Length: 299
Image 1 (cartoon, rainbow, N blue to C red):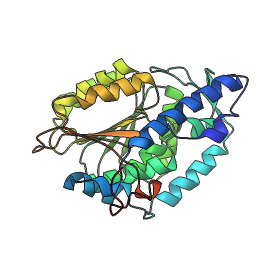
Image 2: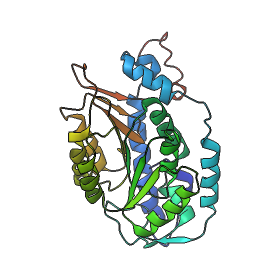
Image 3: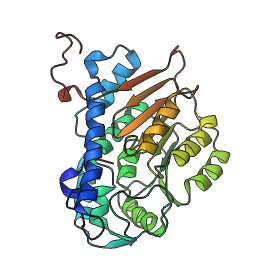
């Protein structure tokens, strides 16, 4: 869920009123401001592990080989006027529209991963180097492109519950030249039951679907027996709703979780040993708070 305010405020008044759409966006702005005020930058970090994450992922501004091609595909999708039927929606649904058919271009603008978050996931995968990867919530396939491109030799499994969306995403992913991506049309619960029974370890999970408190905890709890010291779980949209904020707070207290990083659009769970007390971080790039240069003291 990205900060796409200008477009969404004028989204489609046949589906929602101007005031209801504006109210949603103002709520998000307030949540972001609350997050931003308390967020830290590289200059506040004392943990070597988190400092490495910031340097290799959050502050990395290099343009990698996959970015231009994904950007071109995104642009083509934004211009696509075709509509996808939404026949299966297992989660919290959209706050913007209840329509049972959605224009592809609108889906890109309102529900697909943003370029900034997609690039962040690419850098995370590139840095972390997982050997087993799952995405719950394929949508149009853009997030899978970023993550799978960062580990082209690692099988990437992505799951979508809505059949029409899954078929569309599968066609898009087949055109990327990344043959190691497998798309599944299943509920998250059914997929995890089948996949985890056959795989003893889970290195990397990206959860971007359902967006309910109960569903989020259910899927994460199903994965916990399979995580290990070098696992990372990424949860999308942790500030999207009260339910998601509750879920994020709940998982931060799990005994096996030793460190968490809140980046507003996503939250990261780590299970590294040797951390005596759980560590929780809210982080933004240093350019977002240029006055925090270390030499000027802390707020």
